Amino acid sequence: MTALGSTFRTNEPLLSELLQDVDKGALQLPDFQRPWVWEDHRIRALIASLSLSYPIGAIMLMEVGDDTRFAPRPVEGTDPHKPPSTPKKLILDGQQRLTSLYRALKSGRPVKTQTDKGQEIMRWYYMDMARALSEGADHEDRTEAVVAVPEDRRIKENFDRNVRLDLSTRELEFKQSMFPLWLMYDDTAANAWFMGYQQHHNLSPEATKFFFRFMQEIRQPFLQYKVPVIELLQGTRKEAVCQVFENVNTGGVSLTVFELITATFAADDFRLRPDWDARYSQGKKDAKLLPLKHFDVLRSVNGEMFLQALALYTTYLRHKNGEGAVGAKRKDMLRLTLADYKAHADKIHAGFLEAARLLTREKIFADKNLPYLSQLVPLAAILAVLGTRAESDAVKQKLARWYWCGVFGELYGGATEGRFAHDIQQVPAWVDGGDEPRTVHDANFAPTRLLTLQSRQSAAYKGVMALLMDRGSLDLKTGDPIHVTTHMSEDVDIHHLFPADYCEKQQYPKLLWNSVVNKAPLTAKTNRSIGGRAPSHYLAPIEKDLGAKRLDDILHSHGVDPAVFRADDFHGFLRLRAGVIIQLIEKATGRSVSGRNSEETIKAFGAEV
Image (tube, rainbow, N blue to C red; front, side):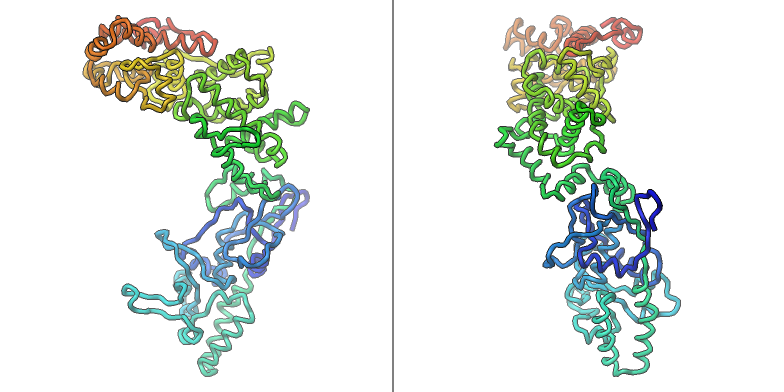
């Protein structure tokens, strides 16, 4: 029945009808459904429940048509040689149960399943007639009556030397009263089997009585079994279908937006996955676009991020024409059409490439050094909007300022789709002379935050290191610019200037010596030469090699005061370097960092920074 204004209806068709629709191809799976293999013991328990008329749960289907078009695929186990057919309905929930029952009871082929340990096996399923009809049998006993045998229909033991159960011929099935369950819904084949069974037993009254009892008590519940079905009607929005699927999916594996859109586009004969793979790995020669992986900083960009940037850009264009709101949420992505993708994918591809070039200019070369991977999404979309205007140095400076405000304001962690929508509207308008974007206005950085930046997991921590490289940090031993050695893929990492071992021996608080203020980008070889010694000790041989003036220049390049550092004045070094880093942050963001002389700052650093 269907309620007025409802998006669904409910009914209770016979299981045999559902399995027949699966066999004909009238009932298929949406392509976003992942393959699923049930373990052998679960299949046997499911069959036992059917034989006892126990409920096995509702099935959810979806009518094909309108906005609910997804590429379909046949249920696993159906005849691969049958010509493809157009389904009338798709299975949203119940794939595992229907697939298992179809393969075991209808397909006429062995079932691909698994052991409890995940080993792939092929099995035929039988009903042990005598055990199934035993007095007082419960569900556990009925499960034992469902017998699974290998593909050759022989159960072997003693390292395959002995055959414990042989059902490889009809006569052996008759002899041991083992009914082939794949004949359950085939009346002609089932009746022929029962006739052969009675003839094998010489038409004895006992065999006939036993046979009719099995027909009545075991087979009849299968034939009369009805399944509660919920059907989503045509006209249900695609994003609603996807949300329903996620809510009811008993497999428990959440689908990605990329998988859902892939299935949608496939219905229009467009293969999204190969197109994305080509963009990532090979580029688009017809559009003169490099592969995204050409830039190390883009190597972690995935298909879902690409679609999110595309949705952001597409909704921005629609909004400019008075159509809806700007957004990059899941629902906005699911509303993307194939026409949207074909019209704008190259622009977003180019936007990501331009984002990589801008980040390279800001001395961020690799994805592991990206403060926020998520910030690439609005950046690529903004660059798609700006097009060739982004080639101007003045525009790049504004974009860099917006970027660093996002980093040091730590504004792109967690749910950020709302900020994305503001960014794509406000940043281009700012470039054209409008007001500062909210991201620039919201950015705020406290001096004491420097002490809590203890590892590269923090966006601001990575941002500080990039600013130090942009300042011109030189390696202590070689004198080479760190950004050059990084770009040349040499082994550069973040290391302590006052070594950790030394600081622990001096009993300095870890909050101080392990903070970003005491760290610098150095080559692994240089770090090994430092060891656990005080700066005055490990600088001596370097100074002898490079000279005092050159060493001073190198230390200055890291924002380190040479005199204080040579004197092993840890606290003086910390305060002065914190001041240099704050100046770098102010320059990058174009915003003043307040609170240098606050009580909290003075307590943390021992003086104003």
